Amino acid sequence: MATNKVLVTGASGGRQGKTGRHVSEMLLARGVAVRAFVHRRDERSERLDALGAEIVEGDFLDIRSVQRAVQGVSAVYFAYPVQDGLLDATAIMAVAAREAGVSRLIDLEMLVSSPDAPTPRMRQNYLSEQVFEWAGIGAAHVRATVFYENLRALSRLTLAAEGTIRLPWGNLGTVIPLVAGEDVARVAVGLLTKEQVPAGSSYPVIGAVVSLREIIETFGRVLGREVRYEEISDEEWRADALARGLSQHAVEHLSNLWRALRTMGERLQPERFEITDTIEKLGGAKPKPLETFVREDQEALAAEAARAAA
Ligand SMILES: NC(=O)c1ccc[n+]([C@@H]2O[C@H](COP(=O)([O-])OP(=O)(O)OC[C@H]3O[C@@H](n4cnc5c(N)ncnc54)[C@H](OP(=O)(O)O)[C@@H]3O)[C@@H](O)[C@H]2O)c1
Image 1: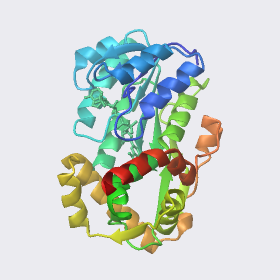
Image 2 (image 1 turned 135 degrees about the horizontal axis):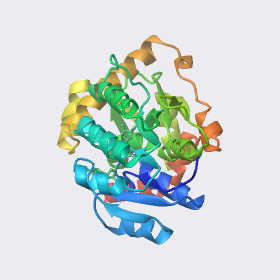
Image 3 (image 1 turned 120 degrees about the horizontal axis):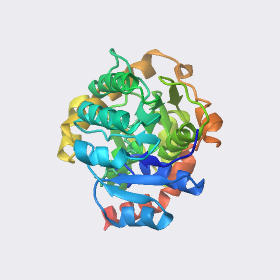
Image 4 (image 1 turned 180 degrees about the vertical axis):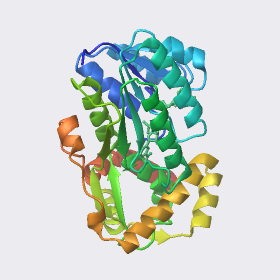
């Protein structure tokens, strides 16, 4: 495709995979013009500005700001955070992108997207995909599994304070498909810059398939300390997560996701999930292993552990 300007939403990068930030940086490194859609200007947007991105402030839920942002771009990267409002944001982007003549929209979804998917957010993802397809804007879907960043966010506090990971993930044999946010961004960049991408196509992204036992061992090895897993009930996890400030939307999605993964992990064999070839084929790199991710994050984890011990 002609590598005209790409509008990248979520460009500052938030509390999860920071895929918008990675997509922006990767596109700029390839010489592709980027318009970075940011919620507000801050040091994160200054960094993108310094790298050469055009910065536009806006809100996914404010149609006027989205209409302004899509003017003159040929492609859009759409990554709406795990919070209320996905369907409104989808309709707004679909209308604005159609009016502006956008010919490619790559949207980030979760691994499973169907009317019967196990979480309410995944079922919304399915509807969102349909709306983008009806809009005739060349929509294609990146379907990513749970991010390493999510695992880190979920385990960080108890890991630092007590050396435990407390989750309702079943026994140590439960198998979890994971991926680095950076690898998800690589796939999106491959699709944003590829000559042809069939409208309505979808791309599963799994970078690692690991058991809970391997996750615990990896954290223990990298941190050089004993790490334990403590299985908690769904109710305990929900209460903890809400107390830590996770939104009702995220808690609803994640608690249903944990139940589905746990059930699949208990009932099915590890080969239920496979590392996908999308990261190498579209992203041009081997998937980042969990251990590499944890090592890169080691300093932050160690600092947190020191703070917790003080
Ligand atoms: N986490 C997972 O395990 C996982 C797995 C598969 C798929 N996904 C998908 O990944 C997507 C999230 O992408 P991500 O991890 O790259 O997100 P992220 O790191 O959490 O970043 C979200 C970005 O959205 C911006 N933002 C929030 N509300 C906004 C609004 N109303 N208007 C404009 N910008 C707004 C944030 O800006 P501020 O920080 O300035 O507010 C931030 O830059 C979701 O669609 C989710 O379904 C996640």
